Structure formats: C-alpha cells, structure tokens
Length: 266
Image (cartoon, rainbow, N blue to C red; front, side, top):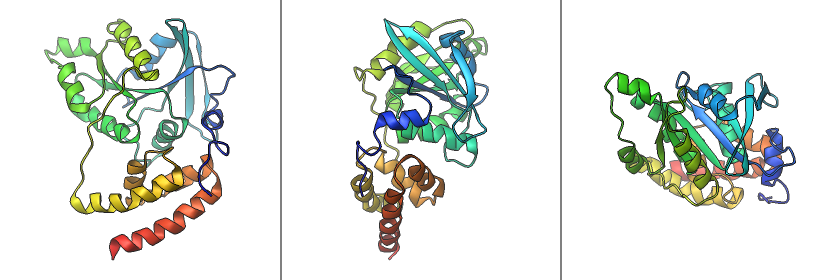
C-alpha cells in the first residue's frame, strides 16, 4: 500500500510531534551544533511564550515556543543540539525525524561565525533533507572582535540558501532574520541548495533506488536523501518511517529494497 494523504496527512504527523494546537501556526525548526547560541536565539524570539517537556516517546527535552511577526503566529521548535543528523544518538534521531516528518515551513540552522567550517557539516546534511533552510550565522559580534569577516552573500551563493548574520545576545540581525523566515515559510523565497555529488558508484546506486522510493513514499520524503541513508545501512530511518507511516509501507519497502540492492550489487 502506498502513502496517501488520507492515511497519514501532514496534520496527523505534526500532531505526533505535539504541534497540533488547533491553530494554523507556521512551524519553524531551530537546529544547530551545541554552543552556537541557538538557545539564546530561541529565547530572544519567544521570550516568556515558551515551555519545555519531553519529545513523544523520548527522554530528550522538547523546547517549544511562539512568536508573532507581521500579524502571523509562528511556532518555534528548538531541536536538540547536534553535530550531525546521521542518527547515531537519540538526539540526532530526534532532530532528523522532526525535520523529515514534521516538515516545518522553514528550518533555521544556527552556526557559529567564529568556526564556520566545523558547523557547516550539519548545514549540508540538513540541506539534503529539505531545501527550506535558512542559515543563521550567529555570534557575529564575537567574530568581529576576533577580526573574522563572514561574507554572507558569498555563503548564500555557495550554499544556495539564504544566510543572515546575527548576534542573538544583542538583537543584531533579528529583524532581517524574521523577514527571511516569513519569505521562506510562505514560499515567496524558494531556496535552491547546491546538490552534493557523490562518487559514481554511489550516484549509480541512488539512481536505481530513487524511483522506487518516489513510488512508495509519494515524494513526501526527499527520495534522494532516503536512498543515500538506506544505502548507508541506516535502519533507524526504516524504523521512523514505520512509526510515522503505516507498517505495511515499511514491509513493502524492505522487500523491494532487498531486491533492488541485489540488482545494484550484481
């Protein structure tokens, strides 16, 4: 049985993440490495209009808050701080699943302006899941103090997604960030992430698997990204698909995937 909007619509999926509060809020995810000022930005945007709890079925803390901008209400979800979403830990799996299955209207990835190279690994991983990404280069005041210059326009050109420099502690760049959030969330600004190319043997395997995943998952999940993860042996993705979709979808996927992998390795 294929994925249908009737069986598991987006509203039902968001309800699984405790996001269905009866209001049509725009959902924004906040991702980033630890110590990038992500929580400071979350607190700045949501103020006292926030609460914490636990992710459904997880011991990981869920921080969720609200803010209004231009007469619209936004729900901001502070994802666990991680260096990756390859899902080697419960925090990484939680962050990955939210971006993949809750399908936020936009995902802000907060990076440290003083050590961009280390932080961009997470940015590139998230860009493979969703194009609706905004890179927030935070701690820009610290970078200036260390005489580090960040060319946000060049970074925008290289990544293909909007980049905004901020200092969350001082409120610098926040108005610009809010404008970009609105534009991406409404689809007025459509990011176009640069495609990451893999070695030919990997690309050939993805080319075989991607049509199969498109057929089964109906494009609800980025099929190229899913193919890459499954080829890497990521069993946690299959488990998450089973949790958020119907179990027989996974059964069908496992059978066809096993056949396809035999074809690829032949």
